[in-house]
Image (cartoon, rainbow, N blue to C red; front, side):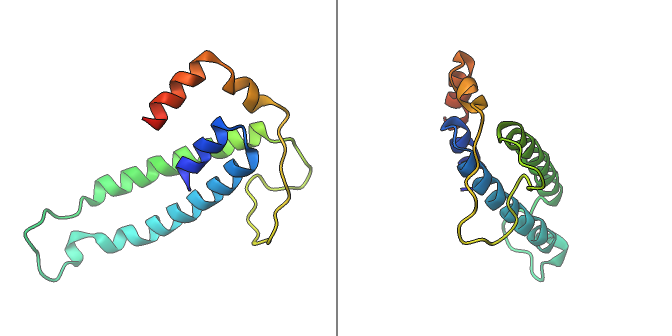
Length: 124
């Protein structure tokens, strides 16, 4: 799931799958942000033969993923039917979340010729 599930939902025009995947990706990113500082090479007791962990690369990657998640949330907001006082990403632990609907924007985008190229590049 996660980011890959979001794109699967996007190309399948499934708003609910996009929403659940975005929520899962957010949880995974939260965990990665908490674990990353613990991987700093200065915390190693004994340095082994392997190269030290690239902390700066990890931090910049996590920032880019955070930006990508924000963009995905905007895509989700733009494709869902608007309902007053409902969050974009369901943050509750409901057993059965409400089914979201779209007004056909995902279907229109999915039928564009260039979206086939985008899908091929993302799934390659």
